[in-house]
Length: 318
Ligand code: MTE
Image (cartoon, rainbow, N blue to C red; front, side, top):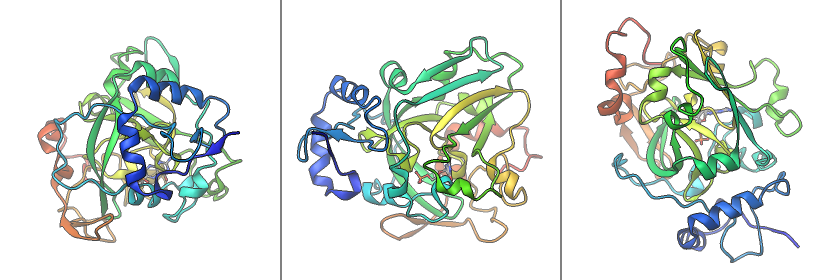
């Protein structure tokens, strides 16, 4: 009999962390592959409570990007979410468990030499997985620090050979009306689309995320695969990606289509440029509630400021 293992927020952290750590990479991949088909609606299946979690996804931490702040508690990061396909409030984590995580395919197409489809198991097995502890600053002025597992977007793009005329990358996310009640809000321009320039996509910080806290990425955080560019506001990080296209035209994002005066294409974090309705000077830390100053480029200027040389005329700051 298959028993559902409670997700991270349902059990004390002390029960899960050591188990995830003792799991080998091979075991994690076997476990991930074992979710195929059977896992519809039940992301984590295993032998029984108290045993090692089937969704463990350990990867060596890359220490090059120290977050400078404490890691946000797993419970906070996985129960306070923005995922409008499941509803507009922050408490969608239970509803999101209905999002099937297997099978899952990400299509890479557009201006590429070799269009391809990647199954999530292929990505987990073949991409150079590492853990990066990145800050995430939401445009709503809250923030968190999460140990994400994933790989650089550049490694994925290398597999499809972008053509020289490709200038932008368009990210499209899943639309599954049978499990996503938010889609009934038909005035929103579904699907959730985001985009960046090819240069931004190739930056070493641009990260395709398949895990968090040493486990497969839970659906409410964008499982099984999402994007993250930590120097931009969090809405740029499309969740539950199904398609990545290389284009000549700048993609219009979900939020830009809704309210272009408030949410632009670039959306780089800048404490000195207020949102039309609130200040961006500081942020509320998820979990502790502490208020701290927001940093230019969310503190990642060392890696990304050079991307914007000569672009001062653009509206670079959301
Ligand atoms: N992706 C999709 N598909 N739908 C969404 O509503 N919300 C965005 C982004 N990605 C969103 C999305 C916003 S506004 C933020 S701040 C982050 O996801 C939140 O990620 P988190 O829930 O993991 O903190």
